[in-house]
Length: 327
Image (cartoon, rainbow, N blue to C red; front, side, top):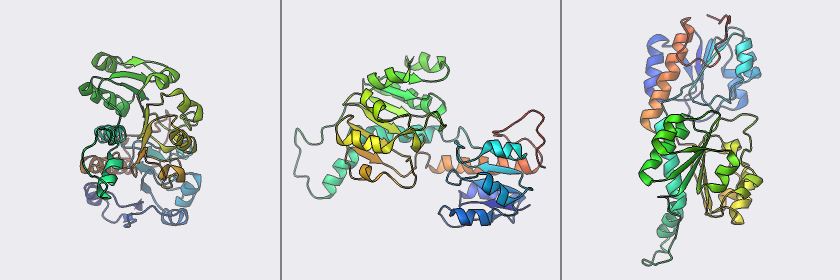
């Protein structure tokens, strides 16, 4: 089998793949392939193990050829893949859900505290030699305990973020396509419309998937609905937020601060955001723990191996009644 892995992944996943297919090909550099390189490298592939940074569209599927059987995405999200076209061509598409829930929800809390308590800003101040002693007005931040947490999208990760708020005695509001009885029972959370959540929350945390309906879910008007003392946290997908509008809102005091792990034109960051001190920026590392990334690599490898063996992969995204998969 001609198998191509688009970027280095943890060795745990590669070892599982190597046991069955020792001669797979891999981009051994820790960088995203250019479009031209990706189109060249996928040629003749029976299977692709891709990452969310790889745009797997019709052109890539064409370049791979009609023998391509499966695209195993090492990510929970799959907005980088044209699943519809893959399905039409009998190509299986898989993802790696569940294993990064704790890592991503933990990072959400790290960002929440970092922006509320001005941690990066105050650390830079100290490292620059400006700290001359304790002062009653030095880096005053926002309180967390007892405040209102707004969860936009109460799926696995959003619900985990909400559950972890119990230690801080927070009031929880959430949006979701369906009620979450367990979340409500354990946190006292209340399901509301987005507008109410934005108006009442002290912290707004984004966890909805990216779709045509959620692009720029947070825009200039949304930000004006929020409290001037509120904070926005995004560990979901970058295009959920209009970054230019966010930069203006932060500059003008429309909201107090923001913390982002994902970006609209990743890896580029809106230049105005880079100039601001009331925003915390991390390079898409919410799931970056040894444990979660290793589990993701294992799941991706197992999905790929199952698909090539003619079995239904554990995390098949495009099952279709009557579908004849290429095996």
